[in-house]
Length: 232
Length: 264
Ligand SMILES: Nc1ncnc2c1ncn2[C@@H]1O[C@H](COP(=O)(O)OP(=O)(O)OP(=O)(O)O)[C@@H](O)[C@H]1O
Ligand SMILES: [Mg+2]
Image (cartoon, rainbow over all chains, first blue to last red; front, side, top):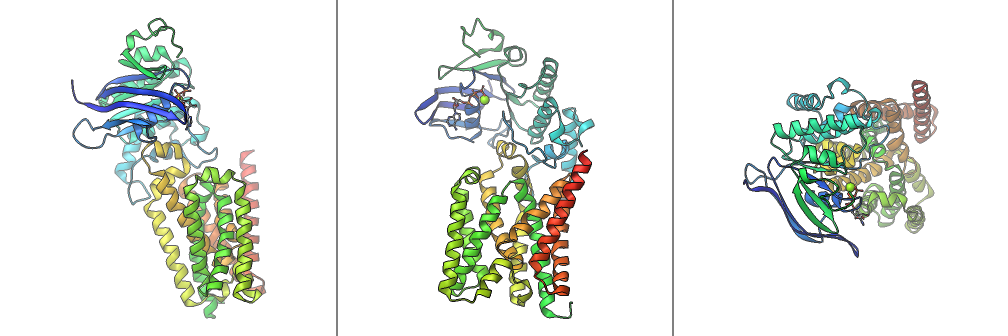
């Protein structure tokens, strides 16, 4: 097997006296599609934030490495909660373009505009690209979040409950899109969800946080019985 | 009116100040920092008074106080600072100490009026240079950090999720805000710098649909306000600050009415 792009070793997280999880160990390889499951409050979002470096774990380490070489692993992250002002002056296109990357130029270069246009096309947003982001439907907005994360061309894509507000068809459409892009660009996927059906259908392997520890297995085995009555 | 050197100075200085306040204001409104801008202007008053007490320039005193407190505030999270009711207590303390410094400095009461309500027409060529240079530093810094600042201001969750160092951006912006408040106070005074920092940007928010439009509307409204204000003050001999406040507030009301109409 190839070298892992992300290795978590002995991760423990306490908030004050409350332990969220204890001694988690796992790896993620290039191109792997993994789901992260666990009941509300099990610590999924907390774990994701630790992987990103947004939170420091109480103990343990996270090692990240770009699949190609020694460069920094590029992670695209669609957070569970977003806080966008109701009258922010952002079209879908300009919202996506926020993540275009650093430069001394305030404006977008021709090349950057093309990258934005490409990712809008990929996520099927071209037709509504000029619509204010605050007037979009929940599903369209999730696609815009996805497009924004994809713009930076990540090697690992982390989606935290990205399908939670969608109807069944929209969920399937969104996941088909995600899996298509992830496969096309050989990205790894970490899909945080409560939806066991999507998990089984679209990911290879699951990570389950339960009773402060981590269990893993093939996504095909994910069903209420095999999880031994653990509530998700 | 440009026959007089003092009017030329006033015109140049206020143009740069309006440009700075117009640009910075867009981010103040987006980041919901109006309350902090108000507090910084009160802190600025205390700083200017402290400057008088020490015998240094009021601008320097203001810069010292506002930058120091911005840096301190950024230690707390801004979210928390907003909720803290201690903020208004701290503000009163600063105003009180400003009054004390003025009394200790033995300055005439017109000095206090100048700090509080502005004294643009009395500005020297050196003063003009200082304001122009400070304005340019603020504008250039915003230019350089424009992308991460914009990301963090409109989608802070997304920005930190995508690796923007939002903490550093916040600190830099608070320092820029401190400098702009100190600079703006030189023209409209520390009591009303708030107007130039927030109303043109609020008008822009009501009318604009993109970042570019917001910046243009905000800057145009700020510059129109100070130019018209200076001219009206020259013609009538009434205070500049009064006219700037009047123009901005009238424009704001018109913009709000227009926005309502559009929405219906
Ligand atoms: N900053 C914090 N301070 C204290 N407790 C926290 C903090 N962040 C999270 N927690 C707690 O840690 C636990 C795990 O939270 P987390 O958000 O990671 O859960 P989750 O698995 O993502 O849940 P959900 O499925 O509802 O999104 C919860 O009990 C939560 O209340
Ligand atoms: Mg969560």
